[in-house]
Image (cartoon, rainbow, N blue to C red):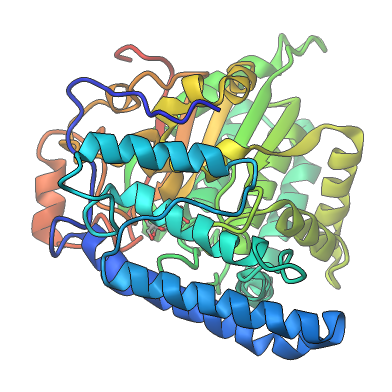
Length: 451
Ligand SMILES: O=P(O)(O)OC[C@H]1O[C@](O)(CO)[C@@H](O)[C@@H]1O
């Protein structure tokens, strides 16, 4: 994989903890050490499990992993140099070349370090180092340090999941006789449910419980004012083309969903994907997840399978009906799960065409790409300090494999594509509008030109 990022002329500076008091600064100073402490605690609490599974070897591995992570926390808190990876995994070389690139970019007088370098890079790097602590220490190398939080978040959201699955089953039953306006109405609803599902991530809460309690459908009206950009109609236009000519001729339309968090958010994405197939708005769905635990609650293959299994085995008629349907989609190849090393690299998506051309080429054959969540948004727009009125297509800096839409609640201080004055108005009303997760966007881009 080509490690070097693509330089984009005219892009504003990267967000970074070097700007004291910024959200990036506070994240690195406060939130990341808290997450590392929780990781250390989780590994320690599982000491007996490691002993039962692997005997003394497991306990020794646990000790070594904890000592590695404590050292990592200290490196972060004292703003040490970012170190090359040593675990010899396939992606290690790419990470290490990226570090060299950063170093040459910053110049020898300014070492690449936690508080001096781009926030996106060092934050991704922390999750890769957590994984290094495990991969260097078999037999605990397969342990997912975030598993407990992710699975608990699903279980804590059971009432909301039940409500959503019940809604989906009722919609499914009505679809055969439904009009376009009814289908459109349901699509708009489920796009919003999937958007607000993104509130439930465990990275912004530094691992604190953050599940969905009530029915997500009941709160959509009250949340409408918090959707700052709503391009649902453009999404409908792209998808409606997949419905064919009404005489059984349906052109194949694949929708790719670049997933974000496990737990409740994943269920909202599965329900949206289910609806797209059931309503004939797509003929295939590809889900993209992470190949190792990432940003606390991001979906891995194990989370994906577990969620579908739990749903299908639920003690509730409609919830289990959904799960059974989802299993069927997977079995028939209508749905598929994919991971690619690129999703867990520090690169933003402007680098994808050169760094991961195979992935870029595969995304090009989708009718629509849905990018879930805040981190994906940061990677779409390069995590830079863009003026809020910058058109979305410009901030994408050449990343245009297919029409795309971001469903993102704002949890980092970057937002483009707003109306003139909209950002200023929001700042006057509430200083934390970009980081609280209370606001969201359904932001679409059809091409690299003005739309
Ligand atoms: O799960 P999401 O929506 O990608 O959010 C990830 C979180 O991690 C961060 O990237 C920083 O910790 C925030 O921007 C965001 O709160």
